[in-house]
Image 1 (cartoon, rainbow, N blue to C red):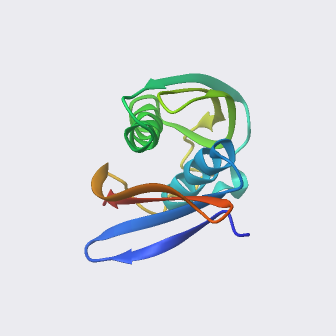
Image 2 (image 1 turned 45 degrees about the horizontal axis):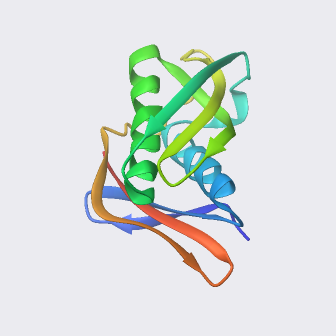
Length: 138
């Protein structure tokens, strides 16, 4: 099973993530999001940031998770490449996001993501696999 795939979308970029459980789904979506932003091969794991997000339901939680990671990237200029879920329910995610401060001499940026949108947002279990879709405004 591939962790995620890019979805063609007019003027935006979509991401479909997969996971055997919700933890893997959230991690794969986060990695996919940051793979869109930058080439992660040269990103070191030097810094860890605690992420806590609450939402009324699972789809909103998934959206809020990606939005919070994007906010932390844009405000603190940290590129994340590893994610450790400590607790995940339908209304709460507690996690560690790991990476390093952006260094344009070593990091190659690919896509500027402005926002995660509600458009086509979906989190569902298909057979035995969790999958989620999100569209990013670029």
